[in-house]
Image (cartoon, rainbow, N blue to C red):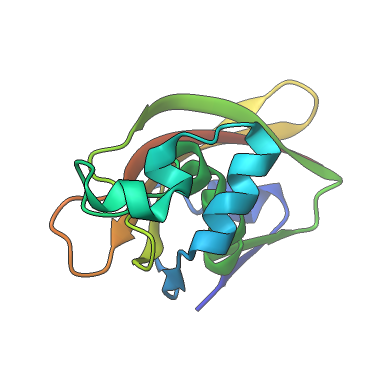
Amino acid sequence: MTITANGLAEIKALAGQDLGHTGWLEIGQERVNTFADATDDHQWIHVDAERAKDGPFGGPIAHGYLTLALVIPLFNELLEIRGVKMGVNYGLDKVRFPAPVKVGARIRLAGRVAEVEDVPGDGVQTHMDFTVEIDGEPKPACVARAIYRHYA
């Protein structure tokens, strides 16, 4: 279920709130290959399924940065922000990739609004804690704190 915040006051009211989980998203080889083409990162553990069978993960895995990039569309399932002129990705405080995402695995995003603070220019800055979970795996694929700014 998507949470909607309308305007800066409602964004501020989200501080400390758990946003829940998204639906599951399967990571296929075609997505991994497309990301490899877009980033020019064709390391065999991502794109060579035959060679990857004998590699450390028993098959091809998604790029860590692909997993991180998928936070953006998955986050849209958790929170919709309305009533602002503009929102921007301000950066990341910390990112870790504790476990690989094997091709064919399903991932989902869990989110929490860690804090919200005012910023100059009639805006707010949100610190979001994200965890990308892998279906059936004990460790997450990615743990990150992202920072976004929204302006009225």
